[in-house]
Image: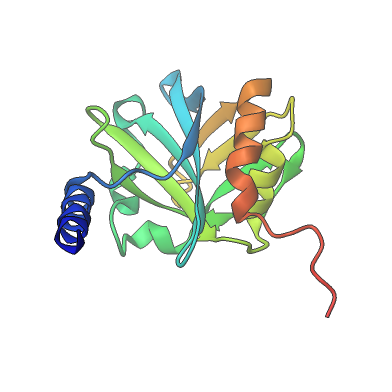
Length: 186
């Protein structure tokens, strides 16, 4: 019996090792981005990862071909020069938040798709967390203004209006990464 238990455990362990890692849960909202060439599709993604190293992330994706004048390469990759300066501003309705630094990458999701990402450690109180918390309120309009850090290049301005189903999904997704409303008394 002991030998069968060991074989069963080894079989389960080898099956788990071969499994592909699952992506963290996320919510994607479709919207538009205005560039110098007009209005184009854009996607906003909210992701919350928990545990050690957990983070709350907001990501803006668009096709770089729709903004050929924008310096995407300045934001690409670790240590990108533009990723150290606060260049993105979030607005929920009329409420603005302090600008945040973003980094970016070209996505494998399609030709020329570029993703700007703003992340923060879970449970922090900052612009990313405040925007994510308000984003999940029904009927809001979320605006991501992505500056190029070059006054000669117009910013990218993306607008998103989650529907009621998306608002509930955003709240459920963000909740584990948001600071608790009430801290326990000691």
